Image 1 (cartoon, rainbow, N blue to C red):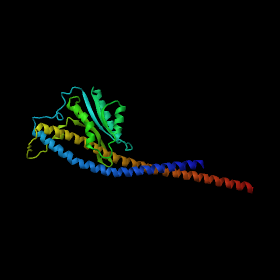
Image 2 (cartoon, rainbow, N blue to C red):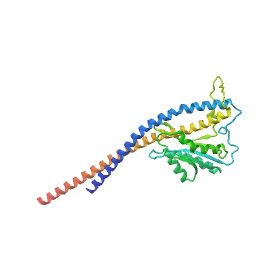
Image 3 (tube, rainbow, N blue to C red):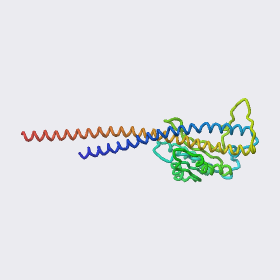
Image 4 (spheres, rainbow, N blue to C red):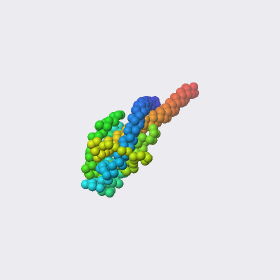
Length: 293
């Protein structure tokens, strides 16, 4: 039964694959909970620093930080992209979806004669940007399961300094936003100049007054840099949470598919075995009939 032996080998192989995907699903589920807790813990800080920045900016209308002003004095027609992806695969179409959005946006800008520069956070994005020929000015890979702000600041600061110096007209932040375990949304949003809507002060019946040390401009400068860094950190945290959720769902689907394949192979094996038994019985009956005749 050479055919039956081959089918048994396939069943064993698929069963081993199912064990691996099931283990990866359980690991991703465990990491997903931690990533979601980390992401939700960072949201209050981002919201609070946004409120303080908005009120400081509205309290000093005579001073406009470069991050808030449109880059009319940009020396070159160029746009920057901060692309956040994963270091590993096996997470469904998550990276594909966000990189498709990035490709669409870059093509629109290139057709308008705009030069593109990029910062790649994550190995998948770095490889993709290199393949399509985008100028990658800095990168960060092997982030791990826990993002650290001090590691993110270096690569991102290259892009922020370029915008402040007028070498870039705008900077876009590209990542995957976590909606829920079953849904993640690719996002390409403008990071710089900061949209006016993002810095709208809360409409309250009172005004905020501040005592600045050393002066208002220095405080606003420092706070806006921290605000932008908080946005990037939040994007990385959202992306990590989306990664683990997408991987858990993908591995569950792979495990289910492996179970279906095993069932189909066992059915084929049983049919093949039954056919072989029936053939042997037919041969025995035929032989017995020939001898008795």
